Image (cartoon, rainbow, N blue to C red):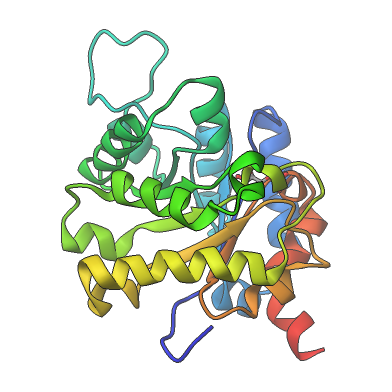
Length: 263
Ligand SMILES: O=C(CO)COP(=O)(O)O
């Protein structure tokens, strides 16, 4: 990271995995694999399925664990006749602090467009939640060399109309779609190219006051053996981890990345 201090944030997106019993077990094992100092140095967040949230809340609060939690999606509506949807208010009531917005799997399988993603970012703030706002290009865009332009357009659309105080809190996750679940990690240089361009855009549009404090994560096949190189890049402030977050020891090893650096 550069000269501005941004607390690293490592978040585990469990996707559609683990029932509520398995969720409690994973959170407890994760905490058992990390010291208070390690949890203090890196903000650690788990993002379970909706059905696990109440159980995760219990495990974290009962044991006073220094681990944050949130959901993987949010309705753009506050309440009403929207069968199957979950509102931000419901998530906030469960003590959630974060919510993933605009994950590529939702953009792809649930047809979420930039306008929906923007509405969800707003709904999250409305409920007092912080969005982990995901952007990223597919393989064809990458092969054409248009990744920066593509991602900046997603950033512009997703942040439209947000207030300065909200912009300062948001977490942006750069997840190249071709690197998700494929074992193909972007090189640290690839990650830096796009994360740096995102920060540049934030500076241009909202000034350094916002750009210097926004945390930008990289996501896509992050593992314990590649996290340190990625985190060494100046504009990468964290990681959004999928598969490797389902294993308590593996995820704990990612959270301990500052030690891989000094080792
Ligand atoms: O999509 C991701 C996190 O949101 C990344 O998933 P993987 O770490 O499994 O590639």
